[in-house]
Length: 571
Ligand SMILES: Cc1cc2nc3c(=O)[nH]c(=O)nc-3n(C[C@H](O)[C@H](O)[C@H](O)COP(=O)(O)OP(=O)(O)OC[C@H]3O[C@@H](n4cnc5c(N)ncnc54)[C@H](O)[C@@H]3O)c2cc1C
Ligand SMILES: Cc1cc2nc3c(=O)[nH]c(=O)nc-3n(C[C@H](O)[C@H](O)[C@H](O)COP(=O)(O)O)c2cc1C
Image 1 (cartoon, rainbow, N blue to C red):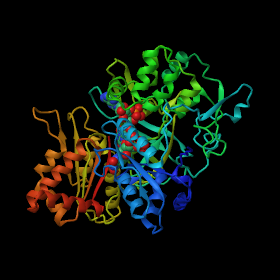
Image 2: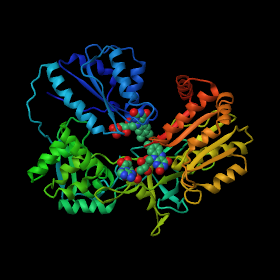
Image 3: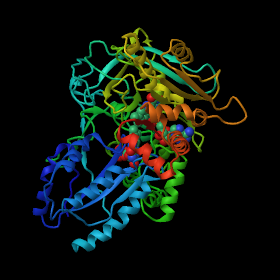
Image 4: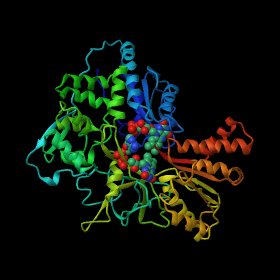
């Protein structure tokens, strides 16, 4: 059996039909859903093609595994669409769609799906499974003992030395190093750290609009990188390359090479999130204690006992790779194999908290520091937020910089400024609305007719974490915000959240939505807030529009399709 992994972005997907020319071939699509039921960036062209094509895919065998999260409105929309559309085009579904839920345990969903998938495929294609899974290295290690250091990657994503000689256009492969000009704590008290940062994009030719996201590439904590080096007993400054053994593959290295282990662990690899089961499975061979080896393999199996062990030992105890190595002293894998297996460190997105009309040369971020203690007593800090917190404006006379690029979004103010806007953004969900408010103020200054601008913000205590209090109160005073509603959840006995204030103001809201064509925006927590707020809108439509729940749901869904109910949420 031969297999290949293909990134749809790198292939002409209209040639998919040619798979039918190959006997016993099968295409497995792993489709994640992002945005509001949208494809990932690398699947966008494939998705567009699927929608437009009337080509025939007769004779193409396929199956789909969808990656999504139930807390989102359009759960696994992309996987569901691709599964259905391929069938419509004549392809043959040889195994049922699998659904992974990242809010539950996506890993377990996949393992369960895969466990049924293999026997079904063997039967379908008349193949006999050989029994033992074998592990095959994809990359071979080359150590460079005498290399010109100018040829060694030091954290660049694409072009070597792109951080030293910066050239536009700036994007995901070529981020701009934006100097940090402001970094201040937003909350007056409390044990959390909420922060406002401003980065300077002067001279970068970067353009953005209110509602866009800024993506930043953080680096991992030096202390964790050093500990990994120590525990594995390696020289982190050794220059290495991991070269693909398949010379025909498009992907020559798992991350930019040549580089040092230190750079790989600092800039390129995700060493913080709990490792996936396939990583544990591969690493198991290096555990000298048979019990550790057995447990690690078990965790990657679909046996209930193995799944439960992975759930408790890795997920619930929040063990990252360092914690696993510390707690399993018999496990000491070679660092090059570990580096081959770890996933790439991902950029983090932040909803831009400024308007380019007012701040064409700077981008504002509003973020909350992630910090928690795991069940095993380890203090764990969010990679990007800790790194952002430590980005001092002047660091020993040097300007701190942030590698960043802009990701366009659909979260946009109404085309007609005279339409009312209703913004619901508790906590850091206020971020894009700071941009919206600045922009509405700017439009007013330009003499434009600007409709009602209503904000629903929420926090714990008025005197603690009322973010941007001065700016918001000033905007209300000058009439840019026509109504400022703030829910303080912990200032009284009973909890008050934004959805409660929405219900209190239901008459006004219904008029704004139903009569005045208001646009509704919700930003912040996807898990609870966005859902509770949506329920409040259903109830308002039911009560004031005299609708049944089904009609109210349809009403809000229609607003979504018309771009009048937009979400910018994360969990
Ligand atoms: C489109 C979009 C827009 C966003 N906009 C903003 C924004 O404007 N402001 C903002 O602050 N964030 C925003 N985020 C979130 C942001 O991108 C980061 O995810 C967040 O800042 C955390 O990053 P980190 O690297 O510090 O944390 P990571 O190192 O990535 O750690 C976060 C992970 O830690 C775990 N975790 C966190 N808390 C606990 C706990 N108590 N117990 C156990 N595990 C825990 C969870 O698995 C969580 O996924 C946005 C996200 C998206 C996708
Ligand atoms: C900004 C954002 C939007 C998302 N939108 C959806 C969505 O509409 N539907 C869904 O099922 N999952 C959604 N998700 C969840 C992802 O699909 C899920 O986390 C999945 O595991 C991602 O797979 P990946 O890590 O392989 O990219 C969203 C996640 C983010 C961060």
